Image 1 (cartoon, rainbow, N blue to C red):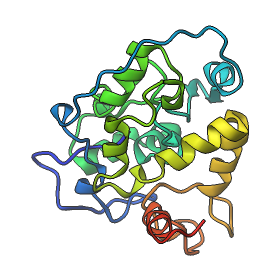
Image 2 (image 1 turned 120 degrees about the vertical axis):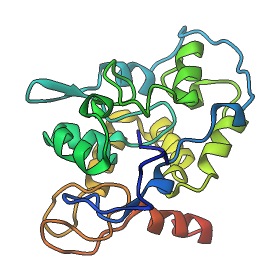
Image 3 (image 1 turned 180 degrees about the vertical axis):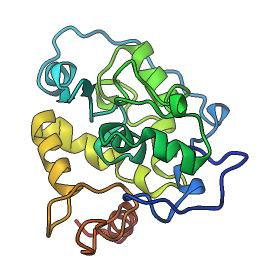
Length: 221
């Protein structure tokens, strides 16, 4: 998902390949004890549409099977950790972040290969305990935990409810296609990460998660 602020992290991470300027504070996981919400159990009976599609949706990149959808609505395809795995840059990024490569191995929130930052995610644990594919499958949606996640200091969290509504209304496949386009450079088509403001390939200006958060706050579609 995203590295939290931790001992040894610089205030600003300056790394190459689309991670420049990404602050550790912008990748922070909120504490587990900040949320105390219990959700009612739900079954899979009678579910269809995005749920059925989600369980089968994976993308094979070389020898890896990556999954870009998440329980909360984040698009893992724009996560710098998953992108490092997809692009074969885990060793490089681990060195830049002063971390162990094994702590950055991740194939997506809904896979068994998770970075050290995803294994402690409360939303993921809750969704798995309740046996739901997306938070909107729960009767408590949107719960206090998810709203707190959306409203925290991380700009890329601000779009989760918007994304979940899009998945529920249009279906997972359509949303994944839209997100792939949204997180690609409009000029050259190279993929980008959440906080990138400039394309590392052609230098074009990008619409970052901070820009999207600002537009959401202003009520701009």
